[in-house]
Image (cartoon, rainbow, N blue to C red; front, side, top):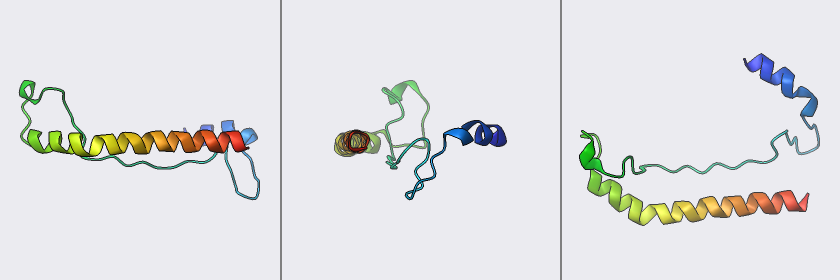
Length: 82
């Protein structure tokens, strides 16, 4: 499968000084300890502490959303400046 994808995409690759590729630039956003269910009482879950998950969701989730939004803004700015 990898060979197929490499051959399929080869004509579209860009070999410029910055070695940009078909998909342009990228960034990573790692978000962990996410809320798994809307209602933990409906599931048998002993591996997670619902209260801790709720606390992380209340405190960290807005920050993660803002970081994701800011990442999207940066992608748009990069695409406009090209």
